[in-house]
Amino acid sequence: MIQVIKNVLLTNGQKTDILIENGRIKDIVANAEGFYPVLLDAEGMYASPGWIDLHTHAFPKYKPYCASPDKIGYQTGVTTVVDAGSSGANTIEEFYKIAKTARTRVLAFLNVSRVGLERIDELANLDSISWEAIRDTANAYPSFIIGLKARMSASVIGDSGLKPLQLAVKYSTTLNKPLMVHIGSAPPMLDEILSLLNKGDILTHCYHGKSPNHIFQNNGEVDPALADAVQRGVYLDVGHGKSSFSFQIAKKAKETGIFFDTISTDIYEDNQINGPVYSMADTLTKFLTLGYSLETIIRAVTETPAQILNRPRLGNFNSGSYAEFTFFTVEKETKILTDSLGNEIITSQVIKPQAVFLGGEYIELEKHYSCEV
Ligand code: ZN
Ligand code: ZN
Image (tube, rainbow, N blue to C red; front, side):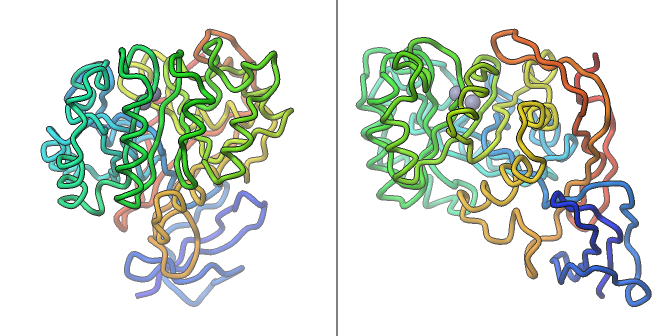
Protein backbone atom coordinates (compact mmCIF):
# COMPACT_ATOMS: atom_id res chain seq x y z
CA MET A 1 0.00 0.00 0.00
CA ILE A 2 1.26 3.45 -0.88
CA GLN A 3 1.01 6.06 1.88
CA VAL A 4 1.95 9.71 1.94
CA ILE A 5 3.72 12.08 4.31
CA LYS A 6 2.34 15.52 3.52
CA ASN A 7 3.83 19.00 3.50
CA VAL A 8 7.45 18.39 4.41
CA LEU A 9 9.88 21.24 4.00
CA LEU A 10 13.16 20.27 2.34
CA THR A 11 16.42 21.99 3.22
CA ASN A 12 16.42 23.66 -0.22
CA GLY A 13 13.21 25.45 0.78
CA GLN A 14 10.86 23.39 -1.38
CA LYS A 15 7.72 21.89 0.08
CA THR A 16 6.84 18.36 -0.96
CA ASP A 17 4.97 15.15 -0.25
CA ILE A 18 6.79 11.84 0.22
CA LEU A 19 5.20 8.64 -1.04
CA ILE A 20 6.14 5.46 0.83
CA GLU A 21 5.55 1.83 -0.04
CA ASN A 22 6.78 -1.24 1.88
CA GLY A 23 9.29 0.71 3.95
CA ARG A 24 10.84 2.33 0.91
CA ILE A 25 10.51 5.71 -0.71
CA LYS A 26 8.30 5.48 -3.76
CA ASP A 27 8.57 9.04 -4.95
CA ILE A 28 8.55 12.66 -3.85
CA VAL A 29 5.89 14.75 -5.50
CA ALA A 30 4.68 18.32 -5.19
CA ASN A 31 1.15 17.47 -4.11
CA ALA A 32 -0.29 13.98 -3.72
CA GLU A 33 -3.56 15.15 -2.21
CA GLY A 34 -6.56 12.90 -2.50
CA PHE A 35 -4.81 9.90 -3.96
CA TYR A 36 -3.22 8.09 -1.01
CA PRO A 37 -3.86 7.51 2.71
CA VAL A 38 -2.08 10.22 4.72
CA LEU A 39 0.40 8.74 7.18
CA LEU A 40 1.36 12.10 8.58
CA ASP A 41 1.00 15.82 7.94
CA ALA A 42 4.45 17.29 8.67
CA GLU A 43 3.40 20.92 8.23
CA GLY A 44 5.87 23.27 9.89
CA MET A 45 8.78 20.82 9.99
CA TYR A 46 11.78 20.16 7.85
CA ALA A 47 12.38 16.58 6.80
CA SER A 48 15.65 15.07 5.70
CA PRO A 49 16.78 11.50 5.17
CA GLY A 50 17.53 10.00 8.61
CA TRP A 51 20.66 11.53 10.12
CA ILE A 52 23.85 9.47 10.10
CA ASP A 53 26.49 10.11 12.77
CA LEU A 54 29.76 8.79 11.37
CA HIS A 55 31.73 8.96 14.63
CA THR A 56 30.09 7.80 17.87
CA HIS A 57 30.82 5.43 20.75
CA ALA A 58 27.82 3.11 20.84
CA PHE A 59 29.32 0.09 22.60
CA PRO A 60 28.28 0.32 26.26
CA LYS A 61 31.08 -1.89 27.61
CA TYR A 62 34.11 0.33 28.23
CA LYS A 63 34.06 3.60 30.15
CA PRO A 64 34.43 6.44 29.40
CA TYR A 65 33.87 6.03 25.64
CA CYS A 66 30.53 4.31 25.75
CA ALA A 67 26.83 4.89 25.31
CA SER A 68 23.73 2.95 24.55
CA PRO A 69 23.03 3.15 20.79
CA ASP A 70 19.43 4.37 21.06
CA LYS A 71 20.25 7.10 23.59
CA ILE A 72 22.69 8.70 21.18
CA GLY A 73 20.72 7.47 18.17
CA TYR A 74 17.07 7.75 17.23
CA GLN A 75 16.14 9.43 20.52
CA THR A 76 18.21 12.42 19.34
CA GLY A 77 17.12 12.35 15.70
CA VAL A 78 20.02 10.17 14.51
CA THR A 79 18.75 7.02 12.78
CA THR A 80 22.19 5.54 12.02
CA VAL A 81 25.10 5.60 14.46
CA VAL A 82 28.52 4.47 13.33
CA ASP A 83 30.73 3.34 16.16
CA ALA A 84 34.31 4.52 15.69
CA GLY A 85 36.43 1.68 16.99
CA SER A 86 35.09 1.18 20.51
CA SER A 87 35.40 -2.53 19.86
CA GLY A 88 38.23 -4.55 18.42
CA ALA A 89 38.10 -8.16 17.28
CA ASN A 90 37.99 -9.50 20.86
CA THR A 91 34.56 -8.09 21.67
CA ILE A 92 32.87 -7.63 18.31
CA GLU A 93 30.49 -10.54 18.84
CA GLU A 94 29.24 -8.98 22.08
CA PHE A 95 28.92 -5.58 20.41
CA TYR A 96 27.05 -7.03 17.43
CA LYS A 97 24.49 -8.66 19.73
CA ILE A 98 23.86 -5.34 21.49
CA ALA A 99 23.68 -3.52 18.15
CA LYS A 100 21.03 -5.91 16.90
CA THR A 101 18.73 -5.13 19.84
CA ALA A 102 18.82 -1.38 19.13
CA ARG A 103 16.15 0.38 17.17
CA THR A 104 18.79 2.68 15.72
CA ARG A 105 20.87 1.23 12.87
CA VAL A 106 24.35 0.55 14.26
CA LEU A 107 27.43 0.13 12.06
CA ALA A 108 31.03 -0.15 13.16
CA PHE A 109 34.56 0.78 12.31
CA LEU A 110 36.56 -2.10 13.78
CA ASN A 111 39.46 -0.96 15.94
CA VAL A 112 42.66 -2.34 14.40
CA SER A 113 43.73 -3.15 17.94
CA ARG A 114 41.97 -6.31 18.98
CA VAL A 115 41.44 -4.92 22.49
CA GLY A 116 39.54 -1.85 21.22
CA LEU A 117 38.90 0.77 23.88
CA GLU A 118 39.34 -1.65 26.75
CA ARG A 119 42.52 0.40 27.12
CA ILE A 120 43.09 3.97 25.99
CA ASP A 121 46.60 3.17 24.76
CA GLU A 122 45.29 0.40 22.54
CA LEU A 123 48.04 0.79 19.91
CA ALA A 124 51.01 0.95 22.29
CA ASN A 125 51.49 -2.78 21.99
CA LEU A 126 51.90 -3.85 18.35
CA ASP A 127 51.01 -7.43 19.27
CA SER A 128 47.42 -6.26 19.64
CA ILE A 129 47.22 -5.69 15.88
CA SER A 130 46.53 -9.01 14.22
CA TRP A 131 45.71 -9.30 10.51
CA GLU A 132 44.12 -12.71 11.03
CA ALA A 133 41.80 -11.34 13.73
CA ILE A 134 40.86 -8.30 11.61
CA ARG A 135 40.28 -10.36 8.48
CA ASP A 136 38.22 -13.05 10.22
CA THR A 137 36.11 -10.47 12.05
CA ALA A 138 35.48 -8.39 8.93
CA ASN A 139 34.47 -11.56 7.06
CA ALA A 140 32.18 -12.70 9.88
CA TYR A 141 30.26 -9.38 9.98
CA PRO A 142 30.42 -8.11 6.41
CA SER A 143 27.59 -5.59 6.64
CA PHE A 144 28.12 -4.51 10.27
CA ILE A 145 31.82 -3.71 9.96
CA ILE A 146 32.10 -0.93 7.42
CA GLY A 147 35.77 -0.06 7.88
CA LEU A 148 38.74 0.06 10.23
CA LYS A 149 39.71 2.63 12.84
CA ALA A 150 43.12 3.69 14.11
CA ARG A 151 43.67 6.34 16.76
CA MET A 152 46.97 7.98 15.90
CA SER A 153 47.89 10.29 18.75
CA ALA A 154 50.64 10.27 21.34
CA SER A 155 48.80 8.79 24.30
CA VAL A 156 47.30 6.00 22.20
CA ILE A 157 50.37 4.78 20.31
CA GLY A 158 53.08 4.97 22.97
CA ASP A 159 56.36 4.13 21.23
CA SER A 160 54.76 2.45 18.22
CA GLY A 161 55.41 5.35 15.83
CA LEU A 162 53.70 5.16 12.45
CA LYS A 163 53.65 1.37 12.43
CA PRO A 164 50.00 0.96 13.56
CA LEU A 165 48.90 3.32 10.80
CA GLN A 166 51.00 1.57 8.16
CA LEU A 167 49.38 -1.72 9.13
CA ALA A 168 45.90 -0.19 9.27
CA VAL A 169 46.31 1.26 5.77
CA LYS A 170 47.54 -2.05 4.45
CA TYR A 171 44.71 -4.04 6.03
CA SER A 172 41.91 -1.65 5.07
CA THR A 173 43.21 -1.62 1.49
CA THR A 174 43.22 -5.42 1.41
CA LEU A 175 39.66 -5.49 2.78
CA ASN A 176 38.64 -2.71 0.37
CA LYS A 177 37.05 -0.78 3.21
CA PRO A 178 37.69 2.78 4.39
CA LEU A 179 40.00 3.60 7.27
CA MET A 180 39.04 6.24 9.81
CA VAL A 181 42.02 7.87 11.49
CA HIS A 182 41.80 9.91 14.68
CA ILE A 183 44.32 12.74 15.05
CA GLY A 184 45.33 14.66 18.16
CA SER A 185 48.51 15.45 20.02
CA ALA A 186 51.81 14.62 18.29
CA PRO A 187 53.61 12.39 17.67
CA PRO A 188 52.93 11.44 14.99
CA MET A 189 52.74 14.74 13.16
CA LEU A 190 49.70 15.46 11.04
CA ASP A 191 51.62 15.54 7.74
CA GLU A 192 53.13 12.11 8.44
CA ILE A 193 49.66 10.69 9.03
CA LEU A 194 48.10 12.37 6.02
CA SER A 195 50.78 11.19 3.63
CA LEU A 196 49.75 7.58 4.30
CA LEU A 197 46.01 7.97 3.72
CA ASN A 198 44.28 6.89 0.51
CA LYS A 199 41.20 7.97 -1.40
CA GLY A 200 38.09 7.10 0.61
CA ASP A 201 39.84 7.18 3.99
CA ILE A 202 38.51 9.53 6.68
CA LEU A 203 40.41 11.97 8.87
CA THR A 204 38.36 12.56 12.02
CA HIS A 205 38.74 15.46 14.49
CA CYS A 206 39.67 17.63 11.48
CA TYR A 207 39.04 20.90 13.39
CA HIS A 208 40.77 19.96 16.66
CA GLY A 209 42.81 22.71 18.28
CA LYS A 210 45.70 20.80 19.85
CA SER A 211 48.89 22.64 19.15
CA PRO A 212 51.20 21.99 17.34
CA ASN A 213 49.33 19.32 15.44
CA HIS A 214 46.22 20.95 14.02
CA ILE A 215 45.57 21.77 10.36
CA PHE A 216 47.05 25.29 10.60
CA GLN A 217 50.23 24.28 12.40
CA ASN A 218 52.53 25.77 9.72
CA ASN A 219 52.66 29.37 10.96
CA GLY A 220 48.93 29.65 10.56
CA GLU A 221 48.95 28.33 7.00
CA VAL A 222 47.05 25.21 6.10
CA ASP A 223 49.27 22.13 6.14
CA PRO A 224 50.14 21.38 2.46
CA ALA A 225 49.77 17.67 3.24
CA LEU A 226 46.13 18.35 4.03
CA ALA A 227 45.44 20.00 0.69
CA ASP A 228 47.16 17.05 -1.03
CA ALA A 229 45.10 14.52 0.94
CA VAL A 230 41.82 16.29 0.14
CA GLN A 231 42.86 16.38 -3.51
CA ARG A 232 43.42 12.60 -3.39
CA GLY A 233 39.92 12.02 -2.02
CA VAL A 234 40.54 11.75 1.74
CA TYR A 235 37.40 12.83 3.61
CA LEU A 236 37.37 15.34 6.47
CA ASP A 237 35.13 14.46 9.39
CA VAL A 238 34.39 16.80 12.30
CA GLY A 239 34.29 14.28 15.21
CA HIS A 240 33.55 17.01 17.79
CA GLY A 241 34.19 15.09 21.01
CA LYS A 242 35.15 16.30 24.42
CA SER A 243 38.52 17.67 23.32
CA SER A 244 38.60 17.73 19.52
CA PHE A 245 36.65 20.73 18.24
CA SER A 246 37.83 24.33 18.15
CA PHE A 247 35.62 27.20 16.94
CA GLN A 248 38.76 29.12 16.05
CA ILE A 249 40.09 26.34 13.79
CA ALA A 250 36.63 25.72 12.29
CA LYS A 251 36.17 29.43 11.51
CA LYS A 252 39.58 29.69 9.93
CA ALA A 253 38.95 26.51 7.95
CA LYS A 254 35.79 28.04 6.51
CA GLU A 255 37.63 31.23 5.54
CA THR A 256 40.40 29.17 3.95
CA GLY A 257 38.06 26.78 2.15
CA ILE A 258 38.99 23.67 4.12
CA PHE A 259 35.44 22.33 4.24
CA PHE A 260 34.23 19.32 6.18
CA ASP A 261 32.72 16.40 4.31
CA THR A 262 30.84 14.97 7.28
CA ILE A 263 29.69 16.38 10.61
CA SER A 264 29.91 13.83 13.39
CA THR A 265 29.76 14.16 17.16
CA ASP A 266 32.17 11.62 18.71
CA ILE A 267 29.39 11.39 21.26
CA TYR A 268 29.36 9.14 24.31
CA GLU A 269 27.57 9.18 27.63
CA ASP A 270 29.70 11.79 29.37
CA ASN A 271 30.00 14.39 26.62
CA GLN A 272 26.31 13.94 25.86
CA ILE A 273 25.25 14.68 29.42
CA ASN A 274 27.95 17.14 30.51
CA GLY A 275 28.91 18.63 27.15
CA PRO A 276 30.43 20.10 25.17
CA VAL A 277 28.83 17.84 22.56
CA TYR A 278 25.30 17.31 24.00
CA SER A 279 23.80 16.11 20.71
CA MET A 280 24.02 15.97 16.95
CA ALA A 281 21.48 18.81 16.78
CA ASP A 282 23.69 21.05 18.92
CA THR A 283 26.70 20.16 16.78
CA LEU A 284 24.74 21.03 13.62
CA THR A 285 23.60 24.30 15.23
CA LYS A 286 27.26 25.20 15.77
CA PHE A 287 27.91 24.94 12.03
CA LEU A 288 24.75 26.91 11.26
CA THR A 289 26.11 29.63 13.55
CA LEU A 290 29.48 29.51 11.79
CA GLY A 291 27.62 30.50 8.62
CA TYR A 292 27.08 27.28 6.70
CA SER A 293 23.75 26.80 4.94
CA LEU A 294 21.21 24.33 6.30
CA GLU A 295 21.46 22.39 3.04
CA THR A 296 25.24 21.99 3.39
CA ILE A 297 24.97 20.97 7.04
CA ILE A 298 22.28 18.36 6.51
CA ARG A 299 24.09 16.91 3.49
CA ALA A 300 27.02 16.26 5.87
CA VAL A 301 24.85 13.94 8.00
CA THR A 302 22.89 12.28 5.18
CA GLU A 303 24.11 12.04 1.60
CA THR A 304 27.86 12.27 2.20
CA PRO A 305 28.21 9.76 5.07
CA ALA A 306 25.95 7.34 3.15
CA GLN A 307 28.36 7.57 0.20
CA ILE A 308 31.38 7.02 2.44
CA LEU A 309 29.63 4.00 3.98
CA ASN A 310 28.69 2.73 0.53
CA ARG A 311 25.02 2.52 1.55
CA PRO A 312 23.06 3.75 -1.49
CA ARG A 313 19.68 3.23 0.20
CA LEU A 314 20.58 5.61 3.05
CA GLY A 315 20.96 9.35 3.08
CA ASN A 316 18.79 10.36 0.12
CA PHE A 317 15.20 10.69 -1.09
CA ASN A 318 15.66 8.52 -4.16
CA SER A 319 12.99 6.07 -5.20
CA GLY A 320 13.84 2.71 -3.56
CA SER A 321 15.77 4.20 -0.62
CA TYR A 322 14.76 3.36 2.96
CA ALA A 323 11.86 5.38 4.30
CA GLU A 324 13.87 6.75 7.23
CA PHE A 325 13.53 10.42 8.03
CA THR A 326 14.48 12.98 10.60
CA PHE A 327 11.95 15.75 11.20
CA PHE A 328 13.28 18.96 12.68
CA THR A 329 12.68 22.65 13.10
CA VAL A 330 14.99 25.65 13.08
CA GLU A 331 13.81 27.96 15.82
CA LYS A 332 14.65 31.51 16.74
CA GLU A 333 16.25 31.19 20.14
CA THR A 334 19.30 32.63 21.85
CA LYS A 335 21.66 29.99 23.11
CA ILE A 336 25.31 29.78 24.15
CA LEU A 337 27.33 27.11 22.37
CA THR A 338 30.66 25.83 23.66
CA ASP A 339 33.56 24.17 21.84
CA SER A 340 36.00 21.65 23.31
CA LEU A 341 38.29 24.40 24.60
CA GLY A 342 35.53 26.14 26.53
CA ASN A 343 35.17 28.98 24.02
CA GLU A 344 31.64 30.22 23.51
CA ILE A 345 29.60 31.62 20.67
CA ILE A 346 26.05 32.86 20.84
CA THR A 347 23.50 31.68 18.34
CA SER A 348 20.11 33.13 17.53
CA GLN A 349 18.75 30.02 15.80
CA VAL A 350 18.71 26.45 16.99
CA ILE A 351 18.16 23.18 15.12
CA LYS A 352 15.72 20.97 17.04
CA PRO A 353 14.90 17.41 16.08
CA GLN A 354 11.20 16.73 16.58
CA ALA A 355 10.63 13.18 15.36
CA VAL A 356 12.01 10.33 13.32
CA PHE A 357 10.36 7.93 10.92
CA LEU A 358 12.08 4.62 11.47
CA GLY A 359 11.03 0.99 11.01
CA GLY A 360 7.72 2.12 9.56
CA GLU A 361 6.90 4.12 12.67
CA TYR A 362 6.64 7.83 13.39
CA ILE A 363 8.34 8.48 16.72
CA GLU A 364 8.06 11.86 18.43
CA LEU A 365 11.13 12.74 20.44
CA GLU A 366 11.37 13.77 24.04
CA LYS A 367 13.06 17.06 24.70
CA HIS A 368 15.56 16.17 27.41
CA TYR A 369 18.66 15.46 25.33
CA SER A 370 19.77 18.94 24.40
CA CYS A 371 21.54 21.36 26.69
CA GLU A 372 19.36 23.99 28.28
CA VAL A 373 20.75 27.44 28.81
ZN1 ZN B 1 39.23 10.21 18.63
ZN1 ZN C 1 35.90 8.78 19.20
